[in-house]
Length: 128
Image (tube, rainbow, N blue to C red; front, side, top):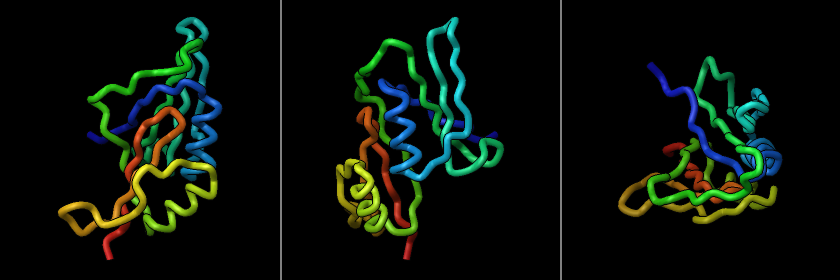
């Protein structure tokens, strides 16, 4: 068994795809409209779905806002350098919520960014 994808809802699919491809450096792997169900799915990742987990963006036509709720935590992405990743994300128009720094009570360097719909993404730097 393996994790295939994590699904999050998007209020503006084009804006979300732009963020995940241009700011986070993912590739749009596939996208398909489902007119009968009135929704669109887009799958993005750092490699092929056959090799690793990806993010599924679900856009329900006509819904432009979601309450994220208290059950959602974050998506975690490993990076070589969390400080450099934050700088690049800010340069590309992304929103850094917590600047890179050592996590409380630990020794890993982490940071948090927010996607356009408010979903949190944790950046975890490689251990020195």
